[in-house]
Amino acid sequence: MPDVTQFELLPLTTAEIQEIQIQVSRVFTPRTPITVRELFAGRTDQISKVLDALGQVGLHAILYGERGVGKTSLANIIEILAGGAMKTLTCKVNCEGADTFETIWKKALSEFKYNSKRRGVGFTAVEEGEVKRLSDHVTERVDANSLRLLFAAAGTHLLIIFDEFDRLPAKTSKAFTDVIKTLSDTSAKVTLLLVGVADTVDRLIKDHASVSRALVQIHMPRMQGGELQQIIVAGSEKLGVTFDPGAIAQIVRLSQGLPHNTHLVARNAVRQAIAGMSRTVSSVDVERALKDAVTDAQHSIKTQYLNAVSSSHKSALFRQVLLACAIARKDGLSYFQAADVSNPLSAIMGKAYEIPAFARHLSKLCEAGRSAPLEKTGERRRYRYRFTEPLLESFIIMSGLADGLISPSLLASLTLE
Image (tube, rainbow, N blue to C red; front, side, top):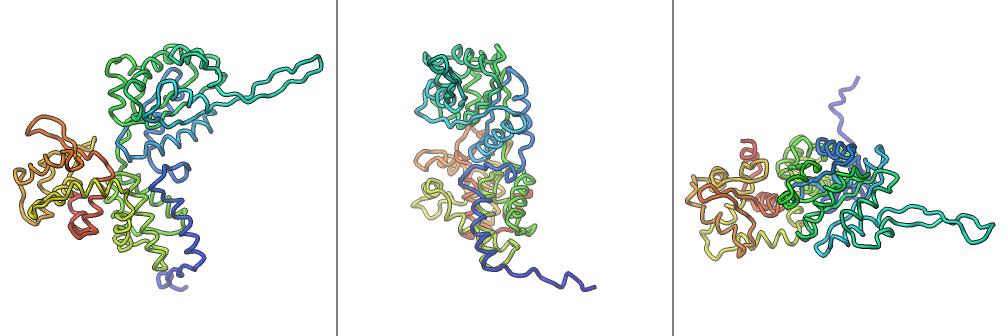
């Protein structure tokens, strides 16, 4: 029997390359949320908590987390699952800054359609069908009581998802407090799922602590390495390609827990591999994909980065300090302290850097004049810092690698500490 290890995979054909080129943008989608369950990886805990809330009458949920962690993708999957196995009528609406309490509710209610039958005129008339919407029944002022009456007449359970809830004006979002409490107290056949950032939770319960009993608060943190690996593996199986373990590890490190970055780098790495007629994505393909990822980054991210690091002084360390901040060890809410920056900055510069040497840079990077890539909280000498835009964090690391400011091996050693 021949030794199979002596044989290599056949090179890709032109037709296979063209097919992968078409499919890779559908499988790895950095720009758009996931809408297909089979391509969604991880988040089983968050999904379970939302579905548990859906199964309990009078209970509602709020899903919150940083921008870029995949909240909209999860909301899309929840909509699919609830409308399937749980036989729940669902709708998802996107909130906008111009929405009022009335407009956002009419937008949501208009998504629910039903057939209304009525008898025609005359003794021999037959019933006529008419498609109506729940919003047709809201003719007066929209408030907690009118919504209670409307949902009391519903024949089945409803799930309404309000995505990007944090975009609503404060007055509009606060009005939801009365709705949640009223619907919960009356056991209405509807579940509300609010999707937003952490400030959304504070805004809702600040003056109405009692509403917290009717609202399950589900934190969506950055993804763990295993969950990011699931994204890569699921995508590779769909495309019929493989990723070297080293390539997977590189992509996970670069992603910084954000699925957007996993999709972006994995997509570009696959393109690099098939350009070389290979079915296997290697570490070299990932390194080559970095420059494409930096080029493909959003214009706003690039602009914010350039404003943050620009300086007329050659000795300024804004690029290096910002890169060290991106690599620094962070807590569960993505905050870090000045002490966490010292070690990665010393590794980048090749000599020891204590806090006084870069404290001024951290302060400047929180100012509007530098596009404020960082925000700080806490008291003097105990400040905690966080990136204002999570996607900027990964862009900084990718740029540092692409420009040779840091090597892949150094990055690996710092992130594994």
